[in-house]
Every structure is written in C-alpha cells, then in structure tokens.
Length: 208
Image (cartoon, rainbow, N blue to C red):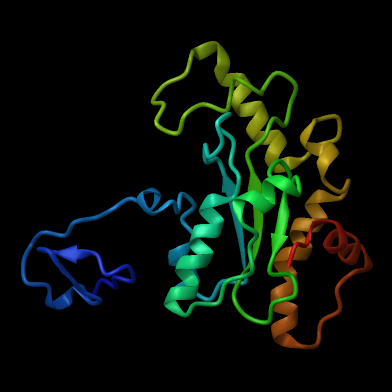
C-alpha cells in the first residue's frame, strides 16, 4: 500500500516523499497547527477541488479571534510546493481592512486552484464575545455556555437575518455560497452563465 507524504514527514528521522519504502515502522506525525496551518486545506490542494469552505476558529489575536494567519501560511506553503492557491492578504491587512469578522471569497478571478470561502469565527450573536472566543487548547467549557457556542456557530455559518453575523454579509448569503461553488466549475466548462445575483455577491465578498 502506498501512502503519499506531501509534507515529507520524517520516518525514522529521514524525510521521504513515498512511505512505501520507509526504512522502519515509526512514522512521526505533526499537527498542521505546528506550522500555523490550523485549517486542513493543504491535502485538498492535491485533489483538484473547485471550492473549499474554510471555517476558521483560530485564536490568533489577543482576544482569541482569527486574523487569517492560517490561510496566509497555507498560501505561502502552497507557493513553495508549486500548488495553485489564491492570493490572500496578510493578517495585518485582514485586520486593517476589517475582513477578520466577516466572510470573504479568495480566488474569484483566478484561473486555477480552488476558490476559498473563508468564514472567520466572530461574535455572530449578542453575548458571544468573551464567551466563545476561548483558547484553542481549552478542553472544556461550562455546561451553561454550550447553547451560546452552538447558537454562535450557527449564526456564523448561516448568517440569518436578525443576527450580528447576518449584518455583515449580503442578505442572500446562501445563494452567494452556491455562486462560489458554481463559479470555478463553470469557468472550467467555459460555457456557463452565472445568475445576475452572483455578480452582486462577488462584488461584496470577493477579495481576489
């Protein structure tokens, strides 16, 4: 059996690209977060997917919210590997432009690689700030806070009307996600027409 090893994990201390001929039974594995890649995007780049929904719950800032570090580090890693990846702003740029608490589409105008739908964790409902933004190595939460975690997660993904999260995306957010998923495939086919509503989505959500 072959096991592909894109990161050249050391086997018995020796980096290898194909584990079939590894010279021993010990495979040392590292968590992607050790390279600041908290989002498991890298393996998908080898599969030729059209779109990736990246739900980022990293605790990058002093207040334990994401600032795009994971996505930025994966972009740098992909460039070194020669893999197609959309342009992603640096964490400082993301914070300065206020993209840190709302979704963004990366790669809308690219001709190769996936379009990435980045959804950073944020206070999507009232009362979530200071509750759900806990350290990434926290292993438990108080039971009475669990509903807040669940409700805030739903708000960040679904972007329903009446939520704080819903105020920071187009009202047709579900359609926008569908547009992002369709966009790359239609571009590959070269014969598809995007609905007019998609252009509105892209004008508000596309970064690159």
